[in-house]
Image 1 (cartoon, rainbow, N blue to C red):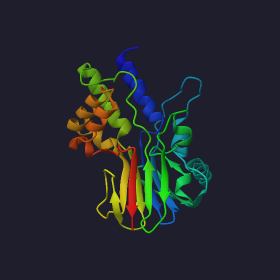
Image 2: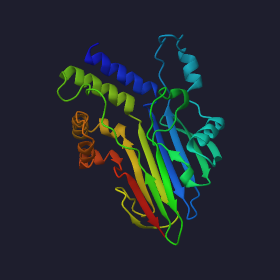
Image 3: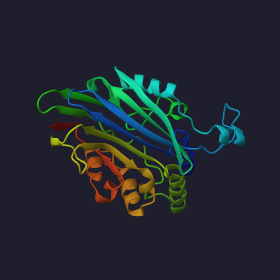
Image 4: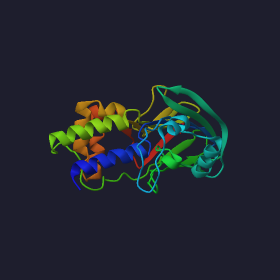
Length: 272
């Protein structure tokens, strides 16, 4: 199989698992360790790819009528997957935005230490079967100055050789880049942690201006693939197999506009 074929297959796989989606998850923690999770998600209508191996395909008119869907029942299943004591407080469909369908779900969290969150939301049938999603767990200490700790999943070096990297054939590289721009143009993922008062002390790498919240993950893939300088640096970083060097690469100011991943093993927040 040629490198170009592998690259195109990888792009189609990304599209199939929901490359054109936007997800923002905000965990708000109260002083007693309870809280809420507000999850807003937009998903683009998927193009008809025709008959696939082992299937009959989808008729264009049926695909257009159905489009992506999210239900309250799916939200309740997601609540169970987040951990013990998580329930759905509210669920609503949002107005379409740029041709994408949206939903907002608010979950109640009884005990933040019982939950695990991923910046990559479960997409139901659009998710890759058995795909591993990074999960963040939490520790909490009550007191006059409560302390919340996010336990980050270990960062792993990319597997296998990079495809269509800087040393690839120019035609192959350009085709792969154009496919990525199509697939990832709407992909933005955020996992934010906020507390109900000002932060007194934290080792977090990315703190908001109000000092009441932090980003654990922020990835704007649509912006990245359209910034040639940043994209070149990212493609260089994919060649690196050393995790510590990857962490250093993520500190680059060009990449930092589009990717923020806190690389601490434990992100601590002490608040008032």
